[in-house]
Amino acid sequence: MRIEGRKIQGIFMERSGLLIILSSPSGAGKSTLARRLMEWDPALRFSVSATTRSPRPGEVDGEHYYFRSIEEFRTMVDQGEMLEHAEVFGNYYGSPKTPIEAAMREGRDTLFDVDWQGGQQIRASALGAQVISIFILPPSLVELERRLVSRGQDSAEVIRGRMQKSLNEISHWAEYDYVLVNEDLDQSTEQLKTILTAERLRRERQTGLGRFVRGLMDEEIGR
Image (cartoon, rainbow, N blue to C red; front, top):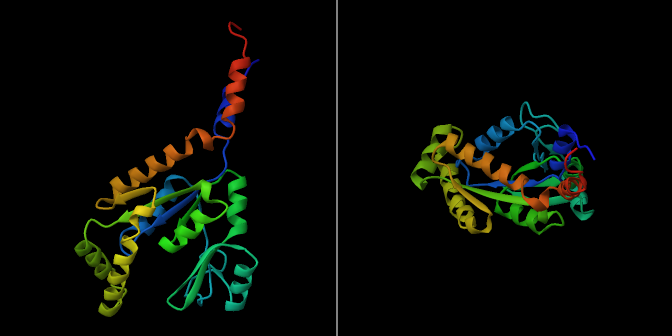
């Protein structure tokens, strides 16, 4: 039995897609790290959330968010079409299940930018076995506040609210598979790459590995 190198690689890499959860308090660098991870692997799919808030200037339906009315959103929840959902500052946000399941069947990984509550719901779902959860910590609360202030986007009152919310977020760090302290973006990016590479190579995730090994055992030595 002859197996071409290209075919070996194809069988070896056959797997179902992973669900990668990134969570952190606001300002810890989660969005930047998610963008860097997707630049490293363009096949990585970012989960587009549905929301009931109004579009901001430049936002496109289906690209930045799926913009839905409250009634439409509630119907999706009632019909089991949301993998996770939550109310944030008076608006509803959630992850539609259909595109995520399609990506998994294609062997594509999906990246989620969700809080600890969303992470809990995804891990508790029927797709929980394919979840990798990563929590991003700031090097200090002083540095976290400095980053929020340096954005120049929020008032002092809003920043105080975000800092208070951060303590609640951080208290859930132990629920995650991996925890990174984001002091240096380059180092944290490399650590994320290492985590994802290792998780993709886990034996139980490589669905074509059994067939590949059986092919090896059936080879005729000496040909």
